Every structure is written in C-alpha cells, then in structure tokens.
Length: 306
Picture 1 (cartoon, one colour):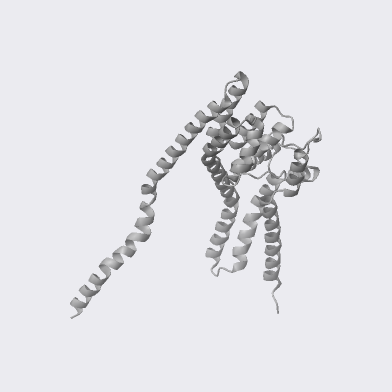
Picture 2 (cartoon, helix red, strand yellow):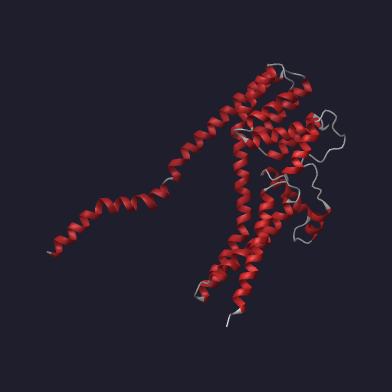
C-alpha cells in the first residue's frame, strides 16, 4: 500500500520550491518592459510632464497589490524602506523587490528543511540536525546573497569611476555640455562597467525629467554609498555653484580616483600571502608530504619487514 505521508511531503516541498523559485526569478529579473517604455518616453522630444518615479530612494511607494502583501509581513514599513534602499544599491530596481525578498527569507528555510527531510537522512538525531542546519542556511542565504551583490556592485563602481571621468573630460573638452557628456559616458562605460553605466543613465534621466542637477547628484551619492562617488558629487556641486572649470576639476578628480584604485589593488595584492596560508596548509602541504615522503616511508617499512 502506498504511504500517503511521504507523498504529501513531496507535494508540499515541490509546491513551496516552485513558489520560491518564481519569487526569486521575479526578484532577479526587474521589469525590463517598464524600463523600456520609460526610456522611450524620456527619449521623445515632447515628453510628458508627469514621469514615473526615477529615483528609487526618493520614494518607496508600492502599488496596491504589493502594499497589501507587505502588510502581512513581519517587517514594518520602515524596515521595508531600508531593505529597498539596500536592494537599489545592489542594482535591484523592481518596486516589489523588498516584499519578494522578505517572502524568500521566510520560504527558503522551509524549502531547504523540507528538502533535507524528504531526502531521507536515516538516523533520527542526524536527520534533525540536518533539517535544522538546512533551515538555518536558508535563513542566512538571502542576506549573504544581498551583501555579496552589494560588495560586487560597489567594487565595480569604484573600479570604473576613473575611466568614466576620463570619458567625461574628453566629452566636455570636445564641446559637449555636462548632461550630454554624462549620457555619452553612460553609453560607453556600460560595456565594461554595467553598474556604473546604469547609475549614470539614471542620473541623466533624473536631470532630464526636471530634477535639479544638485538634487540628482545627491541622489546618485545616496544610491551608490561609494566614497569616490560622494567626493565626485561634492566636487560637481561646488563646480556648478561657483561656475569653475568642470573639465579641469574632473581631470584632477580622475587622477585622484586612479591613485586610489591603484592603492586598493596594491593593498589587495599584499593580502594575498596571508589568504594563501590556510589553503596551502590544508591542501598543498599534505599532498606534497605524501609525494616526497611516501616512497621513503614505504622503503623504510619494507626494510623492517625483511
């Protein structure tokens, strides 16, 4: 007779896994259609006076459906707003991303725990520990993913900023205005540093949508949370306020940013030796000792046997 309990567990596990996968895929795939339509509206000469919110940090409003779902989550609106800011800095611009991320945090421990339980670890004590470990891993995985994505995006922006500044200097010295230079730089830098190109495109879109240049620069610094970008924004605000030469200021800041990038690379190179200690001790030296001392030990044992 077929046992119903294991089949029910498999059905529940499959349903929850499919739901979690759908939510995660929705989180990782922002609304490209909306972005495309927004870009078409922005690119038209006679654009509408009312545009969707371009700065994710300027407003955390969600549609009615997402607001209803957010009301059922254990997080408050302030916590969801802070989570939205972190997701925006990680490059996830979708308006419902905080709700989807929170639901994934709730469902992933259940999915992994149920998966380990259905997998059938034989001994009950080991099974309980495995289920608890899988559930704990599912609880921490979304946060680790977000931190890793934040770090990678921040590092990409830091590394690409000197090249972007060089392109800005070239465009400005060729006679382009600052807004047109930012747009051209965002198009060119997106091939090598997509995150920086996206931020510059958003900056240009905010300016073209009617936001003041100073507020758009401040929003850029708030989104990225990168020290070099903050220094650049402060320099651009002062240049725009006092009317000094933008090209010379950008050239000086580009040299400073390039020096900082070289210093970061040298610092990372100096840390490699320390980071290699544990892999060498755990993996290389045991195999090395087996290859070098193995024949001598075998010969020594054969000598004693004789």
